[in-house]
Image (cartoon, rainbow, N blue to C red; front, side, top):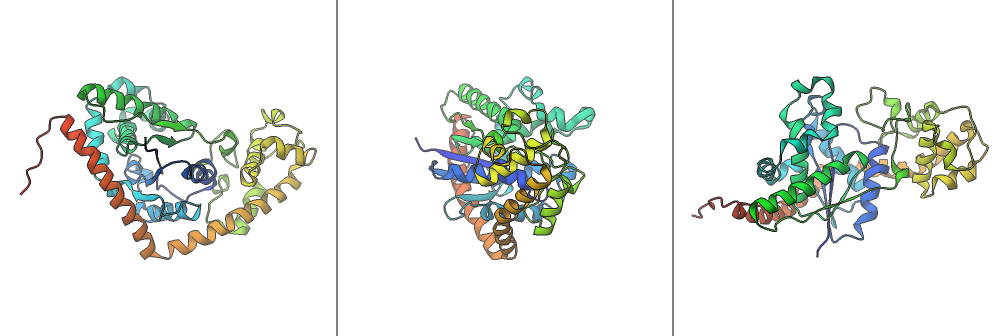
Length: 337
């Protein structure tokens, strides 16, 4: 069986270290073990929250360039915008018709994002897990790299695939497998180690942008919240020290080491010393990514080529899948003139 990886990022702001270490770096490591690789900029998902729907054009360019700058080869993998493949929304509608409301009521991210204004939330925010299932199943993806907070959505995609196959009595969709990144790659806020690094955090000092210059990187690490205790000898002693654990985990991820290895190397040292070492590693690692990202953003022709190539391939695969879906639903085929 041909294996296929599918994942994507919402174009809702500056791409940051959490996106890189928690997602894209994991994708790059998986590419050599998977037959086909599709990476989407999920711009239609960004429309579900009004504050995220601004500047989609520029942010789509940024995410596209970041994929490539972080190590995804656009000539071996396919990079495309979700909105360039109309089949995503068509398949989502067919899935809407076989997905029980009870399944969506259990989705925790809707509750988190809607908050106390659940009755005022839009239908897109409520139903976006069905669109995400369409994103995955349209290409019959076998592997979907996700973080802890997205695993539930892949499980829903599996349920929807099974429900659709059962409804149509046709074995169209395979069940995708969630692929979890290493725990050490979970990057938290530099201001609050109990929260994920996020584009929406009000403080710019909570995150590292891939476009931050060396001075900004150094300043953000210097201001990052820590504690006054020295670095312990093992990771077990970091359980109740979220900010300390976060900085050590970032260092470990950048160096390809374990948290225990880093603790052993810096045992007994204060964070004033450790932050200096972390800054050096961060600058060395991110400077070439930033330089390549900047060059790509300045080359509109190359950006268009990458997205056009990806969209052409994605649409060809999507057309085959939708043909099978429409036939299984007994829809009248479009007459050919």
